[in-house]
Length: 379
Image (cartoon, rainbow, N blue to C red):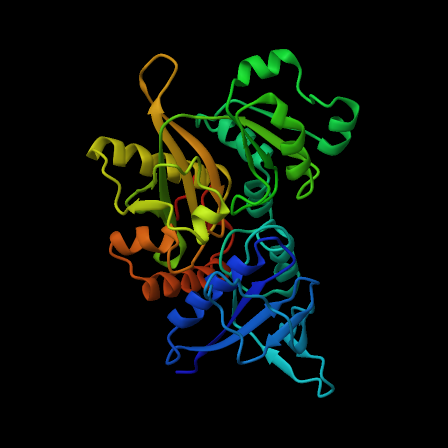
């Protein structure tokens, strides 16, 4: 049987470039070379597509983050009649592709832009489509769609043109909004991940600097009230052949004493957290988390996979409350990432997980029109 040619695309123009590289390293290692002809494709921080130099190490080594810096220049062919890559080193060789695994995080990768490019090229790809990718990347619209689906959200305020708002009013939030949100608040770029550009504000005097930090990443900023509770995550994966979504066993992140919140350093550089996989939850709590994760996946029209992050704690009335924090359409695939660890605990190891995602990407091309029902089930 002829091997499928899979391109794993990584790096990119996002601030999450190095984490994308680490995710790709794990995916590349998991792809079975007896089944797949694998093509690593790097995108530099400037946006150039390359077949990277063989010596590129896609791992964090002694705190040093990997980066795509060079290689053989290629471009993605936009003609669906001959989809694939075109070498730009003079020979004009065309590299046909069966499927793309975009192991990209953040802007210009997880936000619908690369997905649109792949749609134009007619190449099947792993993960959500243009709309779901864009909506899930934008925290404002994620919250709107999840609220419409009846999924609880934390209190928040959106600052459009945050830098301009801050110039006009150094407070940038009126007294009523401050009183409603309380302290602490988290000031976040609306369209970023890996905790980049986020500040935990415990005094309103810190607020202008926090907004400026977030606005340096994205012009739109979200200010979120802190939601007390346990940090719970759950993976969602399309069923075999692209069937109804399945939810993994949930996991819990427990920060070490002295670590205020799960920032970039805590996630990737410091030994600052313990991970319970699976989480120590009752059967009822586990079912509630899994059901909410599936509902969030369907509400945002996700495809293939997603990781849904929650806070589980007591609401204002003292009753237990499950609040959706974020939805990630291309969660991390690094060796410490929660998504593959949750699925491993659920009986799907890393290699099988990658196989499933490639299978689902191809099944999405084969499934047409009425096969996909609006409620997320399959005819």
